[in-house]
Length: 112
Image (cartoon, rainbow, N blue to C red; front, side):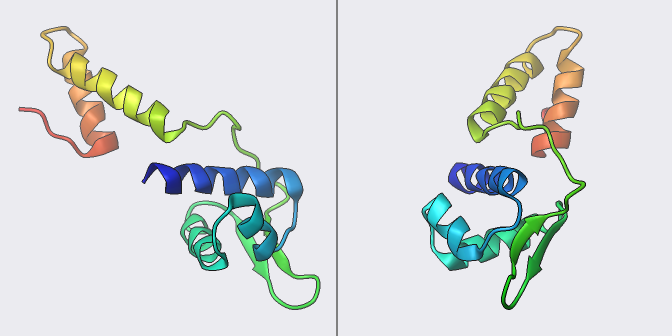
């Protein structure tokens, strides 16, 4: 899962900084096959304004008006946050309830 997440973040960053490009360029940049890039684009289109164009001069691009925080969390960052929340959720601290709530909202983990 971490490789897919990181690859998709890299794909978004590449599109953000390069403008329109081809599936083949993305495949070479990410070091994966064309089919993987197509699947990633299909997944990402549910959440980001990615447009694909066929034919001569076609390619893939993010909507020109789109921007996102380039400091997105890596998979390792997310797992570190999860561990910190789990530790807090196990305490009797006042923040334990909030930590349990966040664990459920973000990771669908219930604590008794």
